Length: 66
Image (cartoon, helix red, strand yellow):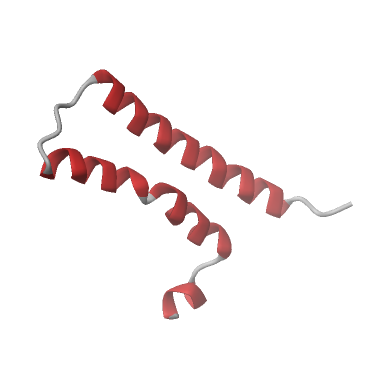
């Protein structure tokens, strides 16, 4: 609960959208999955999508409602 009190909704959303990236990398390393261009591309795409999502939420929150 302390973490939720200290951070804003945007930070919480960013962490939630990006938490799948380290899990994917850890899964590849721990389970010795053969890495390929498709694996690397999908992880990179997920990272970029999470960053764009967080930036869009921050931009949407900073604009006043009409």
